[in-house]
Amino acid sequence: MPTTLTLKNIPDEVYARLKRSAELNRRSMNSEAIVCLEAALVPTPVSATERLARARALRAELAPGRFRPGDIDTLKRAGRA
Image (tube, rainbow, N blue to C red; front, side, top):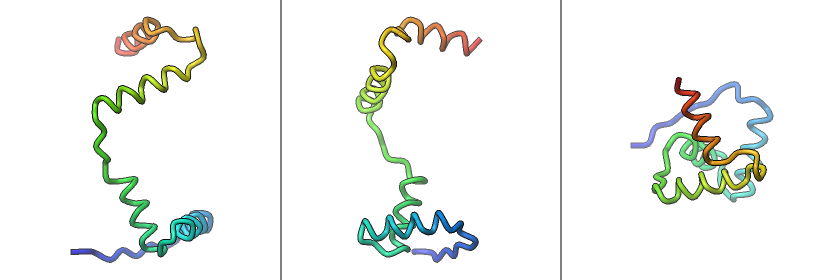
């Protein structure tokens, strides 16, 4: 059963951004707020393959030669000590 939520003291900038986003997405302010809350609070399942692809893409964006895979592993191990 849906529940009603009243928000008070919303900062003007947050309100303006929510309103603009609602307009761009052709949604009511209420619907846009729900979409934003769901996006922030309801986890989206990510497959292991997709997670690995994201990690590889991030690693590829690093400056070439700055971090080699072996260096990253060494730093990770050092952080656990």
